[in-house]
Image (cartoon, rainbow, N blue to C red; front, side, top):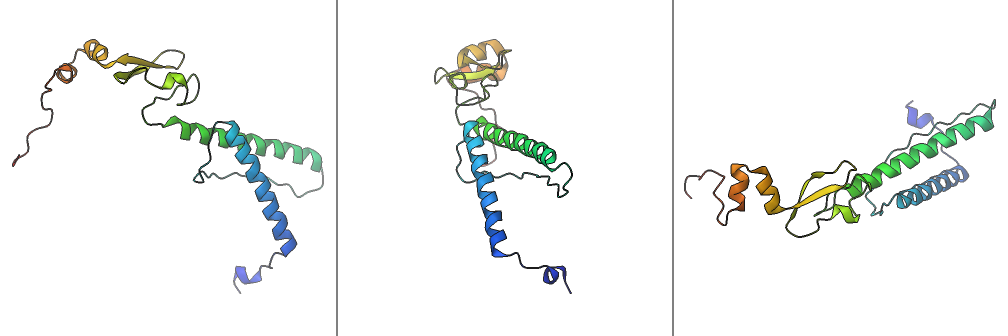
Length: 159
């Protein structure tokens, strides 16, 4: 006899309770995710380990301890998820100071600005493209600055 045929079917009232617990936990996760700056689009998912003690001794203390651990893990997971999704935005750089790529620091001040690095506080450092090219003084950088840039790729047969 296989293990699946030996298991009892879960009674419907217990199934409903399990669904209710899941939905309440999901609602809490969504609230924490939104509070961290996340905007749910339906693709976000993560696993959350939960410790449950079935013994009676110290039940209140154990429940409080495991509940706090679960909440701490849930906060960490939702913050990490929100940060990872906010980190990559086209045309912007991640700002470590604000921990976001949607702040004013993360956007280049002009269309000709390029990311030159970060200042010690973690904010992106933007420079105008020509200034950055003058500062680097490399052959390739200077060729990009010219009106007619030299060809960097070798010519392929048949071109």
